Length: 195
Ligand code: ZN
Image: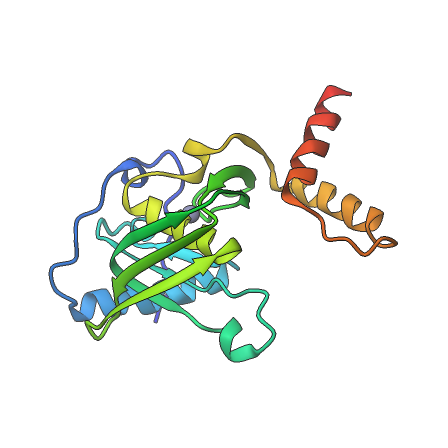
C-alpha cells in the first residue's frame, strides 16, 4: 500500500464526470487499498477515486465515527459504480473535504438514502443510511459527478473559525448537556461577521 497525492480544488479532474468501472482489475483493488491508507492518514471519513486522479466511479467510506463498538467504527465500505436509489427528507450538514483543505461548508442533503454498489469481489450490496452517514455517502457520490461540496454549499468558513465556534458552543452547553446543532454553529458565524 502507498499514500497517494490528493487532488486539490482548482484541478479540473475534480470537476469532471467519472466513467463506470467496467472490470474490477488488480489496479482498482490496489487503488482502493491506497485510498484507505490515504484517507486514514488525512483523518478523513471518505475519499473518491477522482481525489487521487482516477476518473472512475468508485469511492471508499468509513462513516460510523460515533459508533459504540470498535468493529462498526472501523468498518470501511468500498462502493464501485454506486447508485443512490432512494432519497428521503432533508438535513443541513457541516462538511469538509480532503480536496478543499482548510474549509467547512453548510450543505443541504437528504436525511435518509439508499445506495447500492459493488464491492471488490464484484458482489452488489444495497445499504440504507441516515443522518451523518447519509451525508458521507452523498458527498463521496457527488465527487463521481464532478461536484464538490463547496460548489453547492449555502455558506462556508475556514476550518479554524469552525473549530473556534464549535469549542465556544461546547463550553456554553457544558451545563445544559445539550448537543451543539449545525444551525447553531452557522448562526454564530453570521453573528460574528455582523459584529
Ligand atoms: Zn470530498
